[in-house]
Image (cartoon, rainbow, N blue to C red; front, top):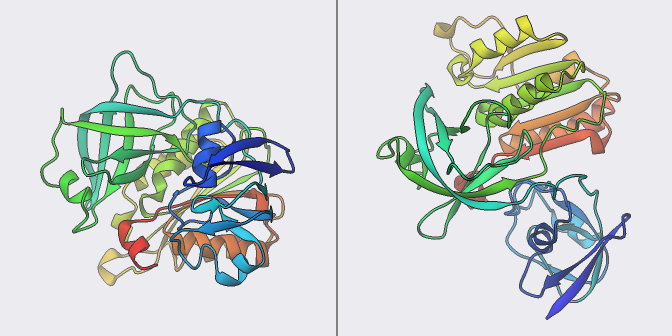
Length: 342
């Protein structure tokens, strides 16, 4: 059975199989619905079902509470239609511009950039080039059919490899390998580019860049892209960690603050100890933003990191700081542990 999906307000239409999610059908058709994790955790693909019925697969309650589902809200990454449907979603211009490819890659370099963070540089086949937008991610295709998603940590023009920042999650199927048996010249297969988290180059609004942990990776790519296109937009990077060592590229951010016009860097530590001798900002990183910038009505926010941080920022910036909802762009890093918590 094939059903018709109509997107409002654009009027775009695409077909969706009965056993397919609306999002996967949209990606296949090159229709730019916003999305992040693709597994019902981050809420980036949330929209409305205006007519028709859908069934939702497994998803996190905070991404789509039952009360919101009853009002017609939907997570298109886990929604399967029962028939023709009309949905309301804010389409992302240019999202289908670059082809999503399945590619082999060879590990060119493994470098520990923090106690529990590895930078991996991937060499693509000589005949292949990965076209992507700064901020997007790729999915590694593991042997058992499982997948793991990681953001690209460099802008497309930077370096000859694509790089990723991978935090060790002890017991993690993939990250245990990264930190133990994986070595240079190993082959990894991936699919990408994916996600609708990337720099909106058509805006001139000042930017708040908000990261926690390795959520810094796509933010780093966005900063590099903004510099590359000679953007004059003011940028303020707020990077949060539990301890100072979690800000594993702190020196790079300080260098940006010295060398990039209109760029400010605010590191934030939540659990500093006496031995850290930390005298910078402390607390929850998104609350430091709110203290610094109580009026975000003319800003654009790019947030990436732990789902709790992204959710809190999305809610509080709109409710308390007048940030327009459509100017909040986010990618929540959901681990298998996050998903298991439901």
